Amino acid sequence: MQGRGAAEDGSPSPIGAGLEMKQSNSSLEGGGEVGPQVLLTATNRWPSTTRLALGLTKTGCRVSAVCPKQGHPLTSTSVVHEVFPYSSLRPLDSLQRAIEATNPQLVIPSDDRGVQHLHELYDRSRASGSNESAIAKLIERSLGSPESFPTVTGRCELLEIARQEGLRVPPTKLLKTSDDLKSWQAGHDFPWVLKGDGTFGGRGVRIAQTLEEAEFCFLDIQRIFGGMRAIKRAFVNRDPFWLRPWWENVRPAVIVQSYVVGRPANCAFACWKGEVLAGIAVEVVSSEGMTGPASIVRKVDNLEMMLAAERLSRRLGLSGFFGLDFMIEDGGDATYLIEMNPRCTPLSHLQLGKGRDLIGALSAKLLGRPVTEAPPVTEKDLIAYFPQAWHSHSEFLDTSFQDIPQGEPKLVEELMRPWPDRSLLYRLVAKLSGASSVAEAPLSAKDGARIA
Image 1 (cartoon, rainbow, N blue to C red):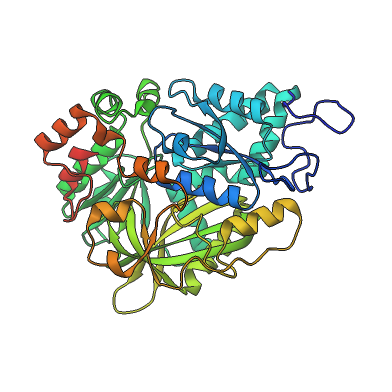
Image 2 (cartoon, rainbow, N blue to C red):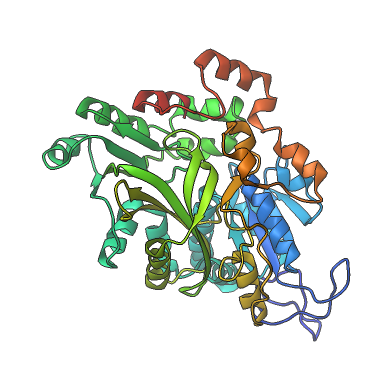
């Protein structure tokens, strides 16, 4: 299979050809050298995807995207050259069409479902053989070693590898049935954290205070892609991507983990063939409830977090953007790895100085040139994600760097109007259920299940 681009002799060029070569036959709108052609994938309408597109364009990349066209903020930016529809029922075909149309040198997934779809497309392309193997090579180049694909999306195996690498990991067990919780109870005090593979944004995370509650959580997470919830997500939240796992009767693997009393933290890093190119570590200051995403973070120098990034990147042969979540134990600095995000995270686009510019470092690697050190966008330690922090009404907002997209008024307006909230049905259901877009108080296990 060949892409749309052409080689110098006029013959079609393979998908992803010339990844680490400079391209000088074309020019950007403003003139000059063209950087890598990048394809972003997005099944969610997360703001971080648009920020990544802006950052990539700033370094000279030509950005295209495959995403839900209706209401996606990527369609409101001035930097995305082409937007392709992402089918919720035939996602692999959507990805393949976008790849064939853009002939990218790199594919960057911006959410967990997109990662899983790329893994599935890799397997399908390898099985097809012949020309379609070019897509498999592109995905391998973009994400890293295929042998690591099951590991980065499976929480239990990843944490076991982290433990083998000498990293701090809380006690963790893969649950085959709810009866496994009884044997776990013998050596582990409450509270417990239960998590489902293939879930994200806190939707598949529950905190249990009793055995009865843990058993309820286990069954609820296994049914997270059930029919009623999938239909609710499709029609109320307007997220039809839940329909496919329901139709395929997906039951996520569930782990139980000891709860680490402390403060949440995370790091984002860019890597290439197992080498970390740049990384940013932060502690969470404000978040959407106990298990939801952060809205305000504080930059920190945490050697344990960056060591975890380096060891896992090397062990798994990773390429692209990744994030790691941690808990820092109260009363000390012991830092426990709790999970990996095998995709870009809200930190990924920020330029925070030497060694903390992920996009700049990865773009330089692709172009085969030294990293150009850009000045940090802020000297402040506190960073408020936009628009999440504005909805949280945090007391730290006024003293934070407010990460508002510059020169993109249409995008700013779009991000301030969350997609589900535009639906009268969504607002009505949220009001009747007592749910809000930002949870200030900790959720119980059953509350979390109710609004997932």
